[in-house]
Length: 186
Length: 99
Image 1 (spheres, each protein chain N blue to C red):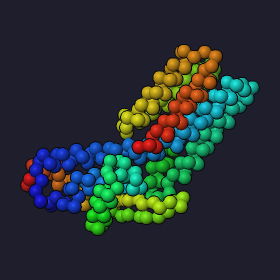
Image 2: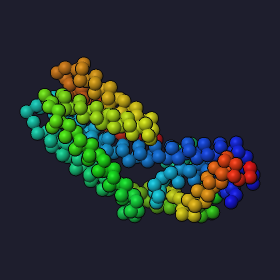
Image 3: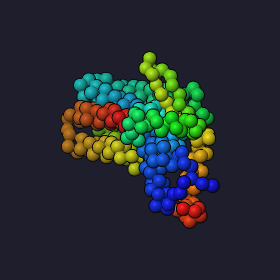
């Protein structure tokens, strides 16, 4: 069997494309359930904020439930027969996302925010940019989701008045849920 | 070191590249692999059979939620063969291997 240089170049190109698509699939499969969890938290908490503002604890409870669900999901992802390498990777993923949440908390401590609108928009922007950066490295769907979250958050912040929580719940929370479903379709 | 004739066929090369890109020990379900490679059932099944015969991949059949499930993974032999084949291709492009 003889292979020419052109054939070798083409074969390496095919290998690179297939490997890129596999990495994209793994990233999407890993992130999709987390996006749906947080989309649901976002939606429920925002709708409660809009229609039952007397429930002031809805956000701490919602974020706590979302964090707990994410940790449980993170633990369930590596199968029983997972290799030490797979378990270590799961841990690194979980710690990375927890650090993002801690970063947001630290940011809200040093930059005083006047209310839910500012805090909520900051969360939307930070996670939108994280998804965008992850997408640049892994695949266009993730990048698209990040851009959508950034644009929708800015639109809500500047253009939506009294109905801001309803908007963020339905549009941004909904975008996360639909985005999670979309990522699973690859 | 020469080319690996089993791996070099276009779809088998893509199958091996896909499995090699997954984290070590990961298994991928047949329909997912089919979607990633944009292959047909028959074509993918035939090439997977060839790779399994060469012991480059392992096929595991079981049931998940009472539905039959087929999962494919790369063996250690397959990973070595793939890496060796890629090294050959790179060497060829760099002018080291006869081509």
